[in-house]
Length: 345
Ligand code: ATP
Ligand code: MG
Ligand code: FE
Image 1 (cartoon, rainbow, N blue to C red):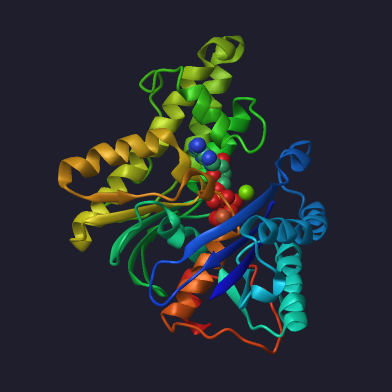
Image 2 (image 1 turned 90 degrees about the horizontal axis):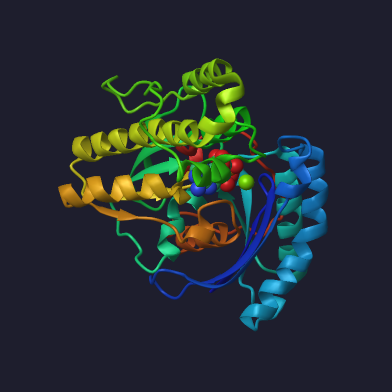
């Protein structure tokens, strides 16, 4: 079974081909991505209307590119998958519309995928795929959640952010430091030259006893430091970046360990853009190694949004009999879609 996956929930157009045989972990045949980051940079954030228009321009050429790379033809595609939500309504509609049009033209069924399920299953495409059950730490631009994952479609939310997401905390702090959107990766690069203990920044909800997160206060603390430093900011920028990163990472690691302890599970999967963060990876690896816990990450290129995770999630849902692909081509998108409502289809 060959699944063509289309991701268009935000500012990345991703298309991929995944092949699934029997109950084996699906294999990535090809994937291609166009990031709109440069286009949105001038506005300091994503402009929804521009995002939708750019997805329209990019999606078919990207589809052709992955077909060529995989040595496939459109007729070889068995199922067309697309991101149904959550995300920007107009952007999602592009992917859904194109997927359903392709499906109808080819006479193949289509399947709408939950974007976060894509993120959380993405480590299955890595060289060291996980096995169920596991704890998932989903840390992206819009979400920060700890989940217990028993199998495909069987997700229990253990805790989540009550305000900003971890990626948002990175991006907003980076903006305060004068770094370009999206600042997460830039802040992380700058942090490598700084002292993570230089500034005392808050670790919100670290000892709250639950598995929830809060990052909104951190950006206020960073702003206070920026004001205090004034002209001295330039010399201390790397230190402030390192201290910010350390604060975010410490909370993520501590809460992940607490989730592991509570569940008794000995396996954790990290997914979403912040999963690319080097400090998070090294701190979590070290803490988990001491406890005999296995950590799984997506390949670096598949941490942020991509079509591969969408094709993969569709393939795994079909393999597990969790969902059927549909051939009525009556598509809808769900801009707001809690993962907990996923099994309702
Ligand atoms: P969601 O998946 O919740 O809808 P999203 O799709 O925008 O949100 P992703 O594409 O998974 O999120 O991740 C993007 C986020 O990851 C951004 O906030 C970005 O700054 C952050 N990010 C990417 N790389 C790094 C890094 N190395 N260090 C810290 N943050 C990073
Ligand atoms: Mg993005
Ligand atoms: Fe995402």
